[in-house]
Structures are given as structure tokens and as C-alpha cells.
Amino acid sequence: MRTIQLLILLCLMALLSGAQTSTTAITSGATLRRLVDVSAPDSSWKSDVGFSNTVISKNLPNAIITRGPYLQLGSQTAITVRWRTDVPTIGRVTYGLSVSSLTGTVSETASTTEHELRLTNLTPDQQYFYSVGTNTTILEQGINNYFLTAPPTDTKRKIRIASFGDCGNNFVDNNQTKVRDGFLAYRGTTLTDLWMLIGDNSYDGADDQFQVNFFNPYKDNLLKNTMLYAVPGNHDYNNSSSDAAVHGVGNPNVAYFSIFSLPTNTTTNTEEWYSFDYGPVHFVMLDGYGTRNVGGTEKRFYEDSLNHPQAQWLKADLAATTQKWKIVYLHFPPYSKGGHDSDVEGGLIAIRSNINPILERFGVDLVLTGHSHGYERSYPIHDQYGPMPAANTLSNYRFPGDESSGKYDGTSNSCAYKNTSEKKKQGTVYVVAGSAGALTPVLPATIHTVMATDYSLKGKGGSFYMEVEDNRFDARFLQTTPTSSFSITDQFTIMKDVDIVQNLTLTAGQSATLTASFISDYVWSSPGPTSFTGSSRTVVVSPTTSQTFVVKDSKQCIQDVFVVQVCSGPLFSVKAGNWDDPTVWSCNRVPISTDHVQVKHNIVVPANLQAHALKVEFDSGQKLTYGTNARLILSQ
Image (cartoon, rainbow, N blue to C red; front, side):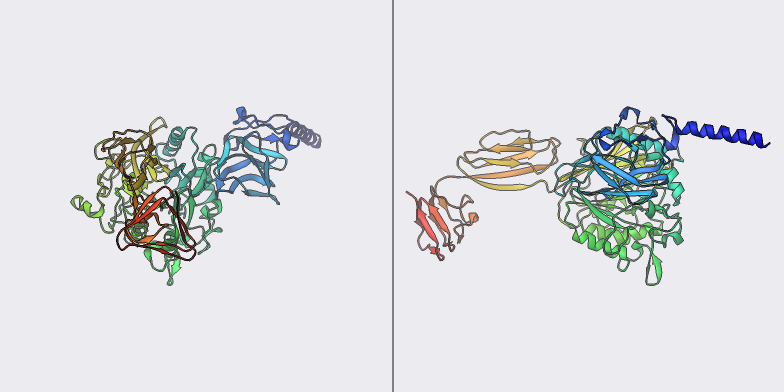
């Protein structure tokens, strides 16, 4: 018997020895990763992206990636990369401007399975490629491992944002997979700046359920190359009121706060609610299920909008922001006639009554919600804080011009919605987009009267996509199709600070550059004595007489007017004031040495100013008053 056992032991040792000397190992499934031996110096690393679905290693390392990598806490100059390995390792991230030139390196100081490395001193608005691994091994690298740093807040380029609501299950009709693949088909090779989760990111709050329902479905596509932010839903809190009262990291039933690295707001030192800026957009991320002890009772923030710390923070945060666009994420919808009825459920009623007034008075443009597993989208509305209004009273809750579909596609009554950058009540769009995973295909036929969409979209799966380009906002619902592609079944556009009227004054022979306030197509004309046409956003005009120029979009929805006054003859004062104030003079400019000036009002030449003119005439009783060391030089 001992001889047989010895023979078996020798055979096992031989098998193990053979496995350790194998030059190539290939695995599949959840552990599929590229592994490249990097015992040679960094300069000898090679990345064969043609084998991105194969694990290659000279000596198969002990560690494999079991979660991620995924991207967190992005800013203009920094980003956090997270991933998990099956055994403790000292993690390392290398990064650079191309997949074949990763020149930057950040390493951990101790072994762990939960890897979280911060990359700093990055260039704003830049695409970087990266690898993750250890000090001796690359565990993942390829053309799909990249990230974008945030652009400056005054950027004019297009910001692209994908939003997935209730994405944490695939139980009905493979909807999670179809929505994911439909979005990937839509975006193609276009880079996405932000991936935003609207809550119920897993339908069980435990870590292992997040692995199955969230990390595995998205590991090979969105997670590794799109900056991720999230708000929690009731299922992220394990749908448990007792778990909702346990905050932050440490509750095994609520893995959300351990899984995600989110901004920590400085006033309450919590990741439960937070805000951040990206380009011209201020994002406000709210927690609608977690509770705080207020006056001895556990309350959600919409239950006490005066004393709850989240409500207090929300008001201060919106008051402080100066960003052009304000977008709020909250899992629970104040308006819905889907799987949840906002006229029946107390939490939804309280949000509408207590939180909507805060959002609207600070000029929030969009509130993005989930919870109801379908798609609904409102008109820009205000002051609708009670039960669903009758259709014939809807005008009480819309400003003039906000009754269109907003689709801006040339169809009847589809002009874009318009507002301004002012922080005031001017109409807020409320969107329910809770069908990126969970789906309720059959829903009540009732349509909430504030909604611009109809019943056909209520039970449809899809994702919500936005583009912000300076003062233009475009949104689309990317409804999934049976072939895992997409169909745009709703869209709307908002424009800020358009329909301007501008007055300019030119001297004869002078040119002016006119720029349309809006981003669209352009049809220029002039009803004045000289015909004029143009089709670009900016034109240069040189009128010889006073003339008005008009630019419209081809859909006849937006119009800017430029009234140009052409000055000729003497320059004369139009009011009393200082010589160096251009508004004092008829051509809206300060006189120069070639001007014939007529003083029709009392004018002051300020101290130490050297004024110029060719000739000066005075109306009866009018005079110049000189400050200390002031002079008027008449040129011959």
C-alpha cells in the first residue's frame, strides 16, 4: 500500500512540475485575462492586442483579476483605478498616451486583493491607456484599457454621458445584455466621458451579487474605459430599512460603499450624497433610500427638507454652483405611472412635495430617476407638487414655449426647449429611465399628464444618453431591439441663452464679426437695403449704412438679431459723462485724433487722461472740465 501511495505522489509531483514549466496557458470564462511576463525591463514589454481574449504567460502567475479594472474619481488631473485579484499582490498601474508606450507607473506598498491606485499629475482632457498588474506581471492591457481626464469647466467641446437605471439584473428577456450591447453599438468608437448609474445597480446588496449582476456583465466593455459614478437605490441597500440606517463601509449587506470610490462631500463627510463638476455641468448625486437620525427618528432626506443633513447640503450645494448646466440623479421618481405610481407611494409624493421646489428654484435643468422599470419623460415643468393634474390645466405648470415635444427634429411642434444660465425657476425636465436591466413589460395604460412621451415607451428597455456642448443639451432614449441593437425612440434638446438681440455701432468702413448664440445650422439674412446671406455660425459684415442682420436655424425655432448702426459725420456726445467712456459718444467709442467732435453735453476729461481729437465744437452752454494733469490734444 505504501508503495502505491508513493507512486501516486510521484505522479502528482510530475504533473505539477509540468504545469509550472508550461510556456503557454489559456483559460476562458470569468477568469479570462491577458497575462504577460514582464521580468524584463519596462522597455521590452510587448502588447499584442490581436490576442486580447487569450491569457498568455511564460510562467503563469498566482494572481488573476476577478473584478475590474474599473475607473473612479476622475478629475482634470487625476483618476483612480480599482480591481480585485484572487490572491494578495502588490498592485501596479502603468499608463501613457498610447497602448504601446506606458511610461508612467504607480505601485502599491503592500499586498492586497482590493487594489485602488490613484494616478495624479495628468493632463486635462486627454486620453490615456493603461495596464494593471504587479511589479513583475501585467494582468491586463490592451486597446480597450483607457480613460479620459476631465476637460476644463469652460470647455466648448461635446461632453458625452451614458446613464443606466436599474441595470442590476438580467432576469427578463435578457434585457441587461441587450441594453448594454445596444449602447455599445450606438457609441461605436466614439469615446464616452461618463457612465452614470441611477440606482438598483444590483438587486441584492451583497458583494457576491454585485459580482454576478454588475461586474461580470460589464467587465469587458464599459467598466475598463468609462469613468463611473453612481447613486444607490433601494436594492443597493438590500431593500431593508434597517440596512438603510447603517452608513458607509462595513455593512456586509450593503457592499455599495465598499465597491465604489465616490466623492466625499466636505460638509457631511459621506459618500451617500455628493456633487462634482465635469466641463460646464454640475452633477448632484442624491441618496433616496439611506436614512439619518433626525430628531430621534431615522428619516430619508425628503421626509424632512428643513433638518435632514442631505437636504441642507443640497440647498447649499445648488446655491454655490456657478456651472451653466445642473443635472440631478435620484433613484426615486416624483412623477411616474409605471411600475411605481407617484400618486400612491408616500416616498414619491414626499419627493415631489419637499424636494422638487428646491431643485426648481435653483434652476436644475434635468432630474434623472429610475425605480419604475420603463421610460417616461416630462415637459419642462414647474410648481407641480400635488397629484397628477388634469390635462387641461397643464398650462399652469409650463412656461410659454415649453409645450412642444422638444425633439428638435423638424416635425410639427418640436422646437427645442429654451432657458437661461440664470439660477431661477424656469422649467425642469423629469426623466424616468429605469430599464437598463430590470424590466416590467406590461404597465398600466395611464400616462402622467406632465409627460411628453406616450404609453409606447413605458415598458421598454433601454439606456439614456446625453450630450452637452457649451449651451446646447441633447438627450436620447436608446431603446433596445431584439437584435441587441438600438432605436432612438425619444429625444429632446435644450438650449440656453439664445434668441439674443444685440446692438452694435460701427464707424463707416469698419467691419464686425457676428456670431450666432446657438449651436445648430445657420441661415443668415438681412432685411435691410443690402442683401446678405450666410450659412456658418460666424460671419463678418462691413455695412456702409445702418443695417439689421438676422440668423435663424433651418427649423425656424431660434433667431438672433444684430442691429448695426453705422456712424458717419462728426462724433457727438449723447449724454454727459467722462471723455473715455465710449457710451458717451454717438458711435459708442472714444474719440481719436482723426475725429471731428461735437460736445453737446458737459464732458469731464478725467485726471491724468490724454484725450485726442481733430477738431472740437461746443454747443451753447456746454463745456469740458479737466481733472488734474488731464490734457486734450488737437491733431492737425
